Image (tube, rainbow, N blue to C red; front, top):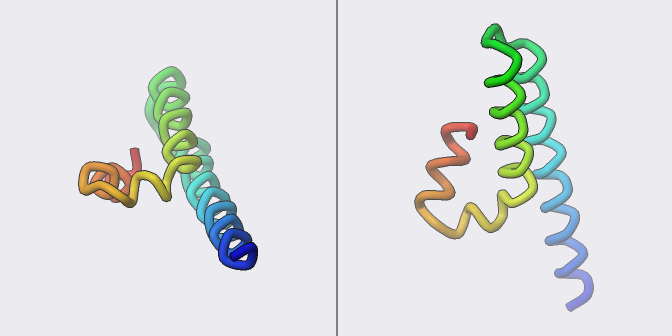
Length: 68
């Protein structure tokens, strides 16, 4: 049981890292104004943290696909 929890934790952390890197890359190379860019980055980081929960609903999956 502990091994399964460890595997889930590792997948969660790796997913967060990948999604956070994608959000940061989008933030750094975006051409929109700074206020909107910072707000979008913050939303994407919170979504990166909660991505496994978002996969459980169709609205969450749509939001992950949109990148917001």
